[in-house]
Image (cartoon, rainbow, N blue to C red; front, side, top):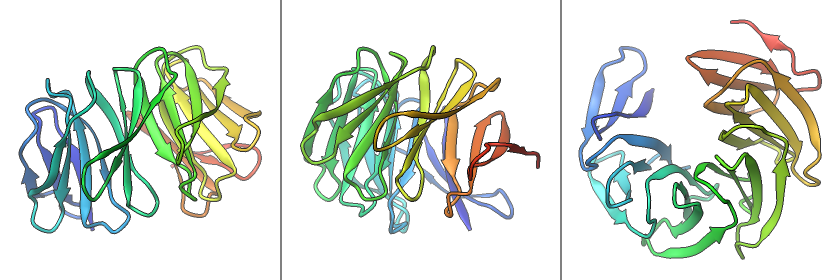
Length: 235
């Protein structure tokens, strides 16, 4: 089993989970790597960086070489990146306040989503690929139509930057984490607030494949019961 990590030195590393050893080092970015995303097939990965050229790079996990890019179009630091469920598209969020959609096969730009008033820090696709969710330092979560780029609706309630967003595996819920020390859970169809977990600033969130658990992290990983009461499971 392998894990992919981006470094402050601008390199992307593929690590062996059991030993922690670096198996491969992908060199190409010229500044800190902000985020990496592995394609659904596991054969490709995308990385975003603080590069002055505001680029995204696509790598082969088999040959460990750049196969596409750099993708250019953003006008400021590219912070977040994610693949669509079918692997055909890549989305990216930038300090230029936009979300961009790219063709994952050619690197061509498809859409530019505008509406955030500050840096876009997190992006994710819905499981069916029909919606995009983004979180921003403007304190909002926004939902977009993935085909047209039309804004479906903002989710408001955070009082700090929204560093992470994710859909539940069944697509019915959205979770967002902020430096306002809350994790918020939203109804993905209506945008209504379902629950708020207070007391923990977070930089990343992820659902378990069955949707019954939610993991949040900022230095320490916490596991939450995502079925109804959002109790924390200490591990």
